[in-house]
Image (cartoon, rainbow over all chains, first blue to last red):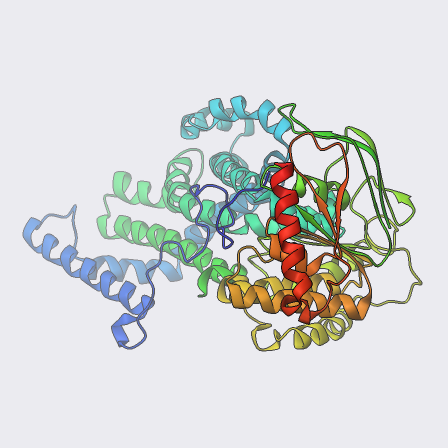
Length: 282
Length: 262
């Protein structure tokens, strides 16, 4: 009846893709050394990358790979002008689609995760839908939703939705029954279990899903912005590279897009530390 | 306090655990349920907690037929059942927060005079004395992963006693703890029982624990459990009983009864 597991069992019954306890991803900082702090390490890595880029540019000596100095000039000039506007357009699309995905996938994942019957019904459907590369649907979505922000938001939403849904479902389904029993014995009904157990238990899964999805979301954003728009970093990069042949400008767009991804990644990381402090202790 | 009438229960695979089982627990009594693993001890406790439904028969607690977990019943499990994302103080306050969440609806929380506040400060004012009593104030801001097993079980005890239960159900509560911690928590259980006079049912597979904490011991054995076998142990219930001569003889009696039953 009762598992004879260790008393300090992790939150999940089986170690799934989401981390049970402990900070995922980021190495523990060694505060004794100034370069031991994580932001310092990232800055150092960025510097190394720029130096390698400069060296490569010197070796290649062709306009297609300009020096990072030229690129950063174009970046900062552009930032005050059109590049900044394109950046904001892209940022809005990513943030809106992410917010939409979280708002819809989390409740759906929680419901599926705690109802075996519903999960049995929907799992085959998810099994089919999850591996479909949603990017290929861009033309179809454009056809249905036309130009403007909505089709771009929808396509990113579709990708994030399934990733978050599956991770949240697995996390909710993996909650140890003993935990649910003891909270029910304190008086919790279904509503309170959602609020006090399933939702907080799934927060790490939500943030893990977001962290995993940031790269995909930005990549898809680029592809989505190649079509039927004149705003966004994807459009900016494509225009500068393939029409204007202004390579420093094109790379400035690439830098902006990378910073967008990096910023989102850091934002998710900070959110994780703030919302799940229990995973970063001990 | 507890009336189990003609109880029948089977595991999902069809194995009968209880068949026509009857049991009566009077108010204020201290019971231990003893038996080998797989004998249905935990199942019985979950039935009393309203977390399992009988296939047949009825469980009555406090004059009401049990159909769902009852607000006045406290449940303490071997693995503590603490929320890993909540601090010791937040965990201890969980029951009160749930009562604030539902209001005095009589289903999830006791029906009581309104005016009891569940604001953060009111909850804290009720929780902190228990944390202090159980030696948890110093770790009140820690998460369960940061404290010892004994402190975790104390947190679970604080969470239960903050709600002032009239019935305490414990499922192997100290089995995962080392011997000194187990003994100190057994003593704490005896003290809290003596002070509050609440009805207790502790499920254990340890003969010594049953002898120490149960003034009456219910023996479960081969499935399905049909008859109610009880060993009386009137001298139990105080700290010194461990050293009393009758303690050893009760342990021997329980051991014999257990061997006969399995």
